[in-house]
Length: 82
Image 1: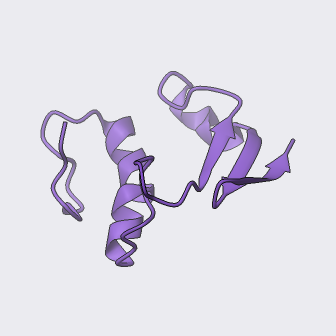
Image 2: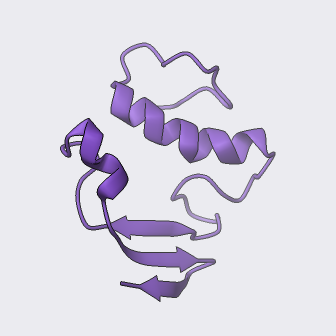
């Protein structure tokens, strides 16, 4: 699925609320900061990402804030392992 560049604050039609919330905090955040090389896992982009201990799509909403970060990678290098 292709997303419009820097989509509006309103959820994208057909996109589940959790997918939309994650998108707002990743791809849209980078787009709004005019970051062309960040925001998604795509060939040629900077590899900044986190590995989570649980799936945020299946975790109860009130528990998402408690999901532990297992690993953080910045520019392709592991900078945290917990």
